[in-house]
Length: 103
Ligand code: HEC
Image (tube, rainbow, N blue to C red; front, side):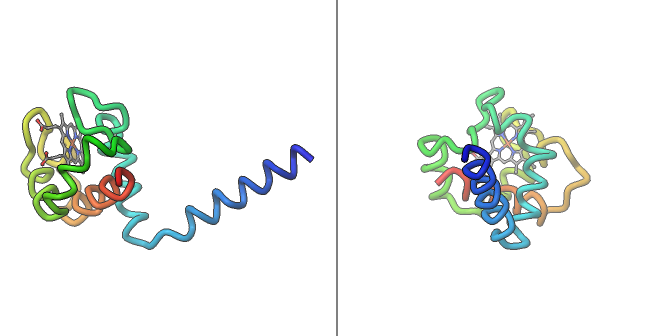
């Protein structure tokens, strides 16, 4: 019985991951590799992903402004989170993903 519940949760989990669009996939993988180090836990005052209060004012600035700031760097955040190999579009996808996860 317990196994069935777990299996059901697993199916739900897989389904929820596969139902996101392709651009979310890019955003998520860029975020995981290049941004989560600071933004998953809020290192150095980075707005923590999932912290609705921290993100509410950022979200009102819009994805373009936040992507611009992330590409150029802001405060203690290095340009592109320190990963200069990322394209501007990849950074923007990661920003969009972070905003989506923090609503
Ligand atoms: C080395 C740690 C670090 C990494 C890696 C990092 N950030 Fe940040 N980020 C910060 C800090 C610190 C701030 C707060 C900057 C401030 O307001 O002084 C911040 C702020 C931001 C903001 C808010 C900008 C604003 O306008 O206030 C966005 C959006 C953001 N980061 C996106 C990203 C993205 C996308 C990545 C990955 C490509 C990333 N960050 C990687 C530390 C980091």
